[in-house]
Length: 135
Image (cartoon, rainbow, N blue to C red):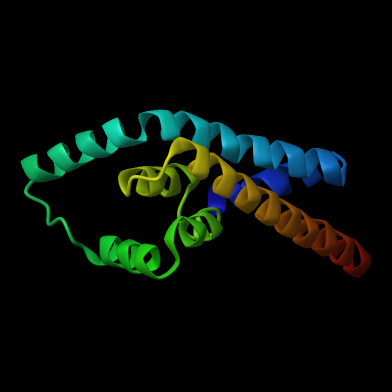
């Protein structure tokens, strides 16, 4: 969440308009999604090979949560939670690993980035207005 929340904070601190901040925040997430939807499966194979070499368990606490979310909500749930719980990179790799098509990854990550960009930018701008009134 810290990375995604940095977009609205930076946009507001630079004096960008609300729309510019939302669009640039979305562009940042969608750039990561586009890159890792292309290399997602290859990256996940590399990670699993690395895990086996280091003799790390496959099902750690975080992996179990991801599988639980996937079973309950599918690609929509992972996409919705990607900006606030996962990172755009991890969320994209997870849905690619579960075999989601690139088209569906891009569609669901797009609406998620739109929703969270609008929501978090609104929260940051309102917090800034409240902070200015206090001081």
